[in-house]
Length: 197
Image 1 (tube, rainbow, N blue to C red):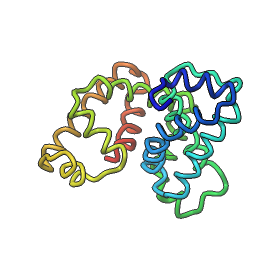
Image 2: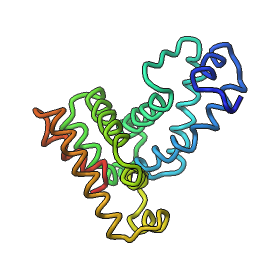
Image 3: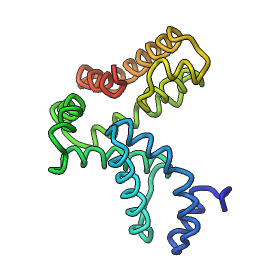
Image 4: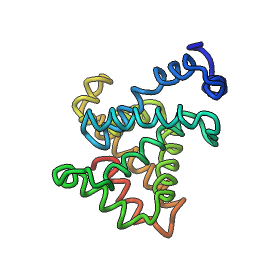
């Protein structure tokens, strides 16, 4: 069952197959956790976000309707839950302070979650088209790894990693400018936040 496609596993989950659900959980929990951690920087909250997503998948299994890949569906759910977390009253002043730049920019500049998710989707598609090493460096950076850690993991010089990040950022800015000419400056500012620059 571990070699089954996501689509087949989802069909089995709709038929109340717990083992199919376990396979999908094992397949994606780590990637979702890393995505959540890069945004909230708190292990407990990141774990809660991932757990909540999978609980919802199971609870809604009978009528879940996925228009994209299951992986993209889950990653979008992470982003949505992170936004919900920051908007909830449970967030402490310290967490708000740490997240201020991202959240304020999001709420002031982008008028709906749909706009934000559309931007993230555009960026993700652009990253997928990048050369493999450029894509890998960008992905590690988006998981909040330092330039030094990325250089060590990939066997590159620190300056090479910086060069790759500059090139990735340049390509993404061009993509954003072409797709959203009317919101170009706003989205480029948000892009800088998403890239931790």
